[in-house]
Image (cartoon, rainbow, N blue to C red):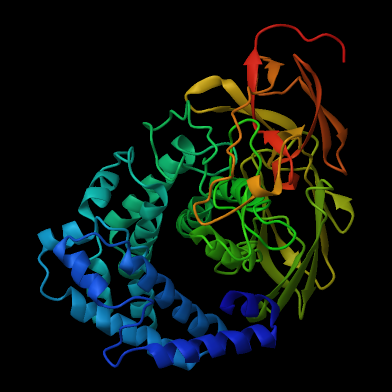
Amino acid sequence: MAIAYATTGDQELKQRGDELVAALAACQQPNGYLSAFPSSFFDRLSSGQKVWAPFYTIHKILVGMLDMHEYAGNAQALQVAVGIGNWTVRWLNGFSDAEMAHILKTEYGGMNDGLYRLYAITGNGRYLDAAHRFDQASLFDPLSGHRDELQGLHSNTQIPKVLGAARRYELTGEPRYRRIAEFFWETVTRNRSYATGGSSNDEFWNTPPGDLKGQLGLYSAECCVAYNLMKLTRHIYAWNGDPRAFDYYERTLYNARLGTQDGDGMKLYYYPLQPGAAKFYNSPTDSFWCCTGTGAEEFARFNDNIYFRDHDDLYVNLFIPSELDWQERKLRLRQETAFPREPLTKLKLSLAAPTTFALNLRVPSWIGSGARVRINDQPLDVFASPGSYLTLQREWHDGDRVEMDLPMRLSTESLPGDDNLQATLYGPLVLAARLGDKGLTRDMQYCGYDAAPKPEPKPWPAPRVTASGTNEAPWMNVLSAQDLRFEAQTRDGKLPVAPLNQVHGERYAVYWQTEPGALGNS
């Protein structure tokens, strides 16, 4: 609600958020404790008894309050957050490092991240110290030494911890925490992610880095993993300005996040990659998963990360219709585009007075040949390499217009560890074979709390196509670039193909089984 209000200015959203804050504040105990279960759950946690993730829930409430304070200006929310922080500080007192190591084996969300945020707002060093106690040596020590020891770990449990490490680096400048976050991001996005940008199978990393063979399951790619990796990407990019970070962010946005919600707002828990699977969503009354909540949050923040600044210079990283109001520079920038249904974007600048600065346009790694940039309809005779920035340094005037071509091309990407399984992309869009809805019932698409379709679909063989020996996809034809319609020539005939994020209510396949040989005419 806080983020949606900040995005839209919708007063009803703010009112409902304020009402929730007040209701939760009325439930908060005098000692600051606030959760949906008795504090005795924490006694079970500290004594080693079975209990599910009490700090995970505290973290969600804490950051919700911080969001209401930061994005919606709710002062009471900060008071509630301070109460939670004070209770946490007191609870942590007296535990040895060895005892904390045992406590931290139970999922605790991003308690370190939330407490660092509370410290940044209040300046109270108690929260900085408390956040530091959530350092998990068994995770952080290998990462700080650039060692991927993630096999066997629950995927989404780890990412909020690393977000806390990233926040600590930003607040303290300690290089160890930057190493932790950067190496983690690098190994997960390069070695443990599918073509969609998603990661995990049945919530875990089951294999060594660089080997996802056998991981295309019905429960591949828990949606919360992609959500948290995108949050981490924002931190990483803010430190180094590496355009590769936004190649990943854009890929994940279009393929692991868009397409995870149906027309009624029901959301995915898993993003199945098993050939022949269909998407299965939460139901209105019988399930509300972690990925339902984070999905609602993320769908409210799709205007985030389009633009960045570096001192006085401006970076355009995503091609999304939007308007930037940079008040300090007295600059408005309006971006108009129908990307990816049209291969270009247009920028119009409104300025109070002529101003000199650099406008940096991301040239994505997927861009095809023939791209040009025009300023006030005049083409420039220079461009930049894919995976870099085109920097336009000049004196800008009110009404200046910039137009950049974004030609898209077909490409392939192998599944790490299995070169014979390849995904096909058109620009940043992962394409999926449309396999129809035969035998697919509503009960198999809308699930109860256990997040499993009933009955589970049997695996289908991946569509078989002819390998080319390059990163091109000779089996794929573009029928309509504007409508994003494609057709694949497989060993068993032609198949309709569409961007994965547009496939709903039918079975699909993302990875293609490649075989040597020559295709006949199609």
